[in-house]
Length: 154
Image (cartoon, rainbow, N blue to C red; front, side, top):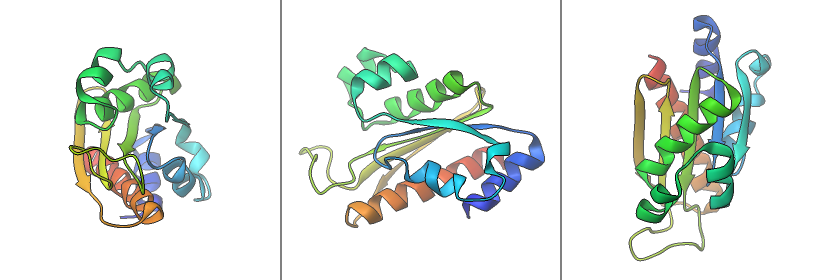
């Protein structure tokens, strides 16, 4: 589905959205704010590459980062919850991953991504393994986040 479909659904339901991005580096927010009228539901977002920003701005616990790493289900879910609190939105949506070409480890390859969405009552998260270049991986993660937010609000 499209960014427009997500924004239409949120608008119809009177819901607002906050976004925390890692691997997408602003691509998710860009795809949403490119749609006219997005300001009615998109409150804002944070691109948090540095772990310090994840903890200081988005309430991710140091322990989660140490135990699971920034690219994990636990951190993706914490980012979604944290941005929801930070911008006081109904829905929090987050991406974290390794877009490439560098940054991989033996257990976390290039293309690994996690997306998460929460409304404060229910949280959904998905793991993905993209096979593209940096741009394709970023675009795929942004689309996966939109799809997950549609699932959450469906």
